[in-house]
Image: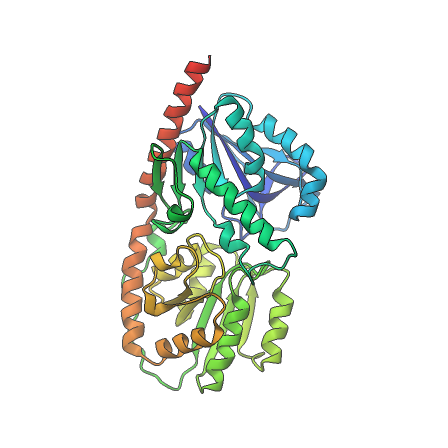
Amino acid sequence: MKVCVILEQRYRRTPNGAVWGDPACSHLFSFWSRYLTTFDGVRVVARVEDVPSVPSDWRRADGENVSFFPIPYYIGPYQYLRVAHQVKKAAQGAIAGEHAVVLRLWSQIAATVVPLLCKTGHPYGVEVIGDPSDVFAPGAIHHPLRPFFRWLNSRRLRLQCAGACSVAYVTKNTLQQRYPPVLNAFTTNYSSIELPTSAIVDRPRPINRADNREFCVVTVGSLEHFHKGTDVLIDALGECVRHGLNLRLVVLGDGKYRAGLESRANVAGLGNRVVFLGRVSGCANVRAELDKADLFVLPSRTEGLPRAMIEAMARALPCIGSTAGGIPELLPAEDMVPPGDAPLLSRKIREMITSPQRMAHASARNLDKAQQYREEVLQQRRVAFYRYLREITRAWLRQSN
């Protein structure tokens, strides 16, 4: 049996038929190969744009036993409205056949697919990887219809989870409380992170008592939206510097708001203290930047369970985050602040940086926590989810035929 996976990712297809994802895309061939532990093949249903070529650092998303069913390409709600009929028609063709179906939510395409599945009674599983209530929270996105989108997509996600035969969440508790499954559904939790043994350091970081040196703060995330709170971090950094701390911020990630964030740093007099590296390709290169830093900060306005933070914890980095999404499942209360609170974030950074003992404790604690997200641990849960969905789908197909 094959599995059909629907998600909201965007891809590019070159004239030779190959499908590609940018360096920041986590849903590439190695990701889809996970499903092949249980299924004979994977059909990915996502937006695909035909292009003459892709940049040299882009990576293949398709491959052996992994194919793509392209959905008409669109960006944003207005473009979607222009192609909504074509999207629905394509989605109907995508789920035709004797496939198991997985929806990676939340997703506009999935919202089109679910009524088609319910009409025939076709069972489906969902993997909840994000929270629209946070994605469309105040400050996270700027759009006149933001409150409506927040209500609509949150309601859809609740109904989609309630209608699924199996539900997997990236969090242990947070998303389950907002978007509960039906009582008899199979449920589990696992992150989409790839954390092999090589990504985890052997020991916590030693205490560094040099008070006069420059401390490096690092953050990782897309700058395509304000979801990761990089603007808040820049403001907090400025406050720390005004209090006499010698700090430098390194930002890994790119997007349309990068220029505005660079301007924000310059206006605050932090031009020489904030370094934007753009997209850093390759896990080894990202880990090298994490290893050079003293503190990882992620003041997100919205999160599922942040892979970047888990990767930082696996390098034994002390971390500070917001209370968004599943971050409270990773960090203790004393290492978190509410989203958007730059003054409190500044205070937390100062408290951490000026206390070698606290830095050492956070390093050891975070490294220990990261062990829970080792690839071999998470894969066992994924396989259980895949197998349950396969057997439920197989039973339904026998009854239908």
